[in-house]
Length: 113
Length: 288
Image 1 (tube, one colour):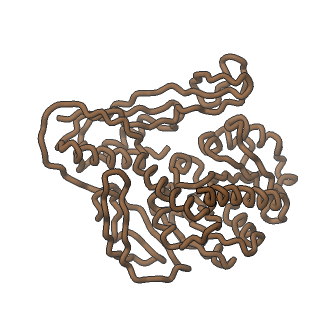
Image 2: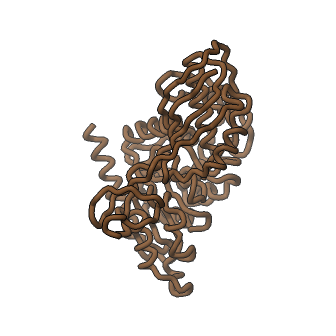
Image 3: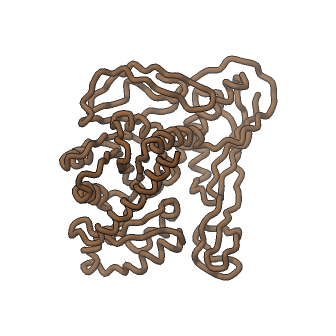
């Protein structure tokens, strides 16, 4: 997806937080990424290292936590958990599923040195 | 350079020229930031913004003590704040804003030119997003409509901040329609809210029926899909019903219109869609 832009968004959130909490160095960043967020974890790690250079989070470890994908099946009108975006409904086999969340991209917490 | 938004004076381009606008930034805790531009050009019909900057660099002196800061903040929260600010401005003026998204070459600009022509006296404005060139804004201006070109430089999508700046140059009239033609890209623009009322995805019949399955996020985020260039359908063995069922597979609630901007087929339905949604927006505005 746009992992570089995401990391720039992360950098700006991290810098705001660092300023607010008056901290000089972040050692670990934990992010929650939804199954349907379209984020490539490897690319995110690569971009993270590049984008954080020169910031309070330079050299910090990036930990990604995956959140499950949920969708509403328009055939049986039940909210179900699915692994892949185009999977059929595990209950009725229907093919019309509307994602309900699972596209989250959230910074959970920061570990400060 | 602004240390909060990273918006760099030297890299912003208006009408293809570097312009050093005397920024007065006002950084508040709870909203992004507000800009006051002191630049003196007023050629609104040739507005052109250029982006391509990286993040801002800041050093924060302070204590060092091992601990955890729980923040639970969306990565795109900054963009979302800009988008909300845009949305508030648009709501106050009763402006219907549409974010037009598609792959390159789907016929967005041609559709837009035709739409502008058919809308006649309806007040409207266009924000054109491309990595480079002012070609699209020039095409829109040729119809007599007001347009601002935003060049994203290396960026693959428009964001809320760029659109907010572009809106400042448009003096949007009450009850007008703002068309935001995003960078031709079916991936990244899906995630960036611009403050629009709806995303309208345009796909042309030559792209392949499985396009919605290949790029589901964009079609899930869109309220309306316009299946464009249907005049070409007989020449390229395309199954229009399959396009529609694939669109509904990734977004069961999506509305679909079959259109040919070239022949005008289906354009009346698209114009009716615009009129209905504009009326709904004005009703909301007058209710406030």
